[in-house]
Image (tube, rainbow over the protein chains, first blue to last red):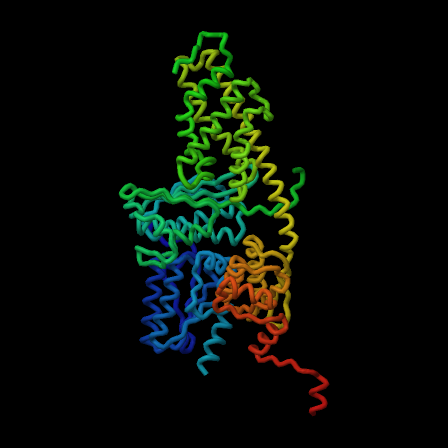
Length: 126
Length: 147
Length: 297
């Protein structure tokens, strides 16, 4: 029962690109993993002095209110630590579902994909 | 587990995070097998995730019964989330956007309701809760040869 | 109740009729919990029980008349209106005529079970005959419901066909990174879903940063339409695109204000060209007259 599902990493990889953290979410995400990720990101921002976080959700086929809350909390926490968060690559079906669900994530900055997200962070940073 | 593609009635336990993931995967598979479009699949999986989490968090765990429906004209999917937890004391309040007793965003019930076609809650304080959601494959009156 | 089993003079329809009359309450109680009645009479169960009783009474009436298989039997007249309203309610929630008919067929088992219990030997010919008569009667009820449902559906299908014509809404690429949907006609839930889906797909395909929803061709904007617009704007934003609603005619602007509709943070422009100018400006693109430029140089 606690076996990770096929095609699903046990932990979400967090990469550093300069002073930007790139988090790529893929496939099924357990609630526990999402909460672990929240801690990892916060930790990396404060220890490695990151100024931006890009969360790539192009590989995510469902965002429910739990994951939505985790994403919003990551952004707020990062904001408190002076890092900006951009949510990138949301699929159309996911966006439509989130809006119907009543979750519009107003506090989150969004971008079409990772490139655009990096662009956004660079523009604002300079 | 069912082999992929085949859609039959299933009952899955809801007792942990990992079970939620299973429920989502199974609903996705069923919905795809029944011919739901991508957006409808996503809505169903999201509704299932919300409701299964409710069963886990508020109902202390339980099970989900997933049943494919077919009335000859349209295919559908029924999901019944059953727990024997404390029940919902004030259903109207629980169905209100933003109301939460579990530290979430309070969109579980009300949000899931908006994602499906039919939605009903059967609850009694102390005796548990059954939430049933039904969605039908969107019917575009495409020309069907021979009909 | 004792059904005179040995009395050959009493016909099966009459047995059924008196059974229905005498067990009205029990039948109604069982039917009230079937999907058909439960989903239509959502306000109170008592209301469902009353409706069930009316149907049982009508069936009893039809049985007495002996016209078990006659859809036009006058016994159905008192409940035709009620059945019509019920099927319409079901049709509006998306049930098809055959779905509704299936639900009516679901009424058979509980009442046949009750009838069987009336007989000491349910396998004896009189019992079989009564069950057969009752089954026939319920089959006729199903046809009556089917009839009303099909009528209601024909109307619905026509309306949907009309809307589908309107659905053919193209998403146009106006400029690099800017797409637009000219909305024409009524914007209902089904259609706004289609618009939302095609707009979001276009945003991905065109890598658009700006999406313009032009409502010049939308006859009225009520709170529901406004809600659809705001949902589309919100979904586009989640994908990283900014949405502009254009084509708000003065009359519509007035209605929006008078109805107290809050378009919230939705960016609006009066015309499509104003919206395009805004989108281009935001992307640092300037458009100017070639001649004017030459004469300045």
